[in-house]
Length: 521
Image (tube, rainbow, N blue to C red; front, side, top):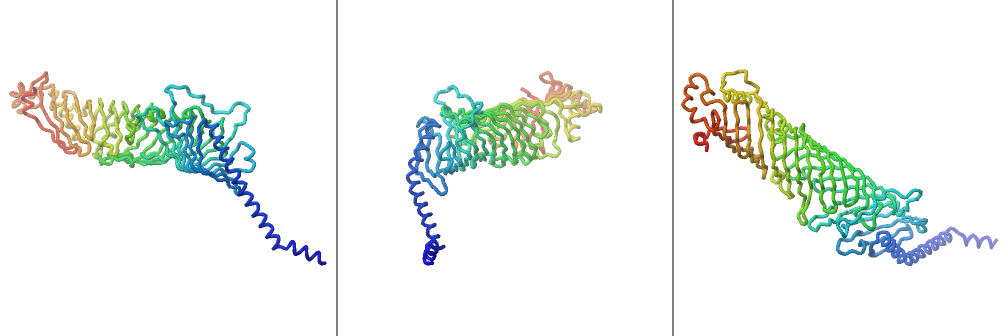
């Protein structure tokens, strides 16, 4: 009976709890001691593994090994590709957490890695034109990929492609979230990423494949995927509209080809106080990481009902913020009514027709208004120009009748006009050279300026008529004009008159320059 009582006292709940607690304490202490003993080994193993796989020198700061849960914490990881100090480090990580499973300790797998504050600097090749390593996108037949990391997440990441040319800014992507799966040494890893785009402000969401990593030449590491981009064009001073884009990319780090399309509803230039149009583009481009530039190999632009084609580059200069956009733009189908809607407030637009356009487009870098920075230099023509206002069209018909010497011929109506000219746009001012306006019987040649924002005109030139001055009139007026025929007949024209056009587009002031008319030289 006494033995039973002693046994009960020995295994009482209170003593059992104390025993379990002591055992747990012993395990915790043992785990802490073990972790302290293992930390240098794990530290050295990580440095050795990264040095070998990346063919680089590796520096690793403070590290800690936790047994419960099993994970490795490290700070200040720096990787220098081939030990190079002439370029930024290949990889810099502020802090990382390696989460492990017990079974992973005896294999080649890491369950999960969480990174915060990562910089990946892809170096240029030491020699221009050096050979690339093959773009191996699949593991060899019959071989299971050597998975290194099952799952990697990173926040606050910056990826920089260091250009070979010293005068170029690097290509930089700020990735605020990155998720990668199945990172292996001999097969691509899948990833999703969200990238911040500064100008125009918006987010780019990317899904694709990355790798396998090319240790000898990081710039030739394969990359492909598709993306969406939503941006506010209002963050570019002088523009307005919301842009939605989608596309695909493929290539290697230092040369990525991409193609896609964009749609911008209600695209407008606010300072012009004019209408808006739908802007759509379809494009093909090459991002050249060795220069930090973007080559726009093909761009099709739809602005309202107008269709334009463009090629050009987006390039930067080291030490100067922003990019310069230069394009060669051509079109055989610029809708004049749409164009006038986009740049004037007149409703309906004053004229209609199809313009043939050929122009150089230059938008320099800078923070100023787009209208002040944009430069154009080109030519245009329209062979069938019509006017929406009956009064304006009647004036054109009257000009044609008078020019042909048939002022009362009502059969001459709805006369089509032809216009052509060369122009330069700079600082918001259009300068016209050799501006020609023709109808049957009359030709107008002018030059001058038109300021887009105040819509102020200052043009001067000549009106050439086939008919003599007296033939432009009837009855008594014709007899009165007879003496002036010799004075106004110059340079092969039946009548040559000097004119000017001033005022605004809404209220033009068309006047006769008598001195230049009598002395056209």
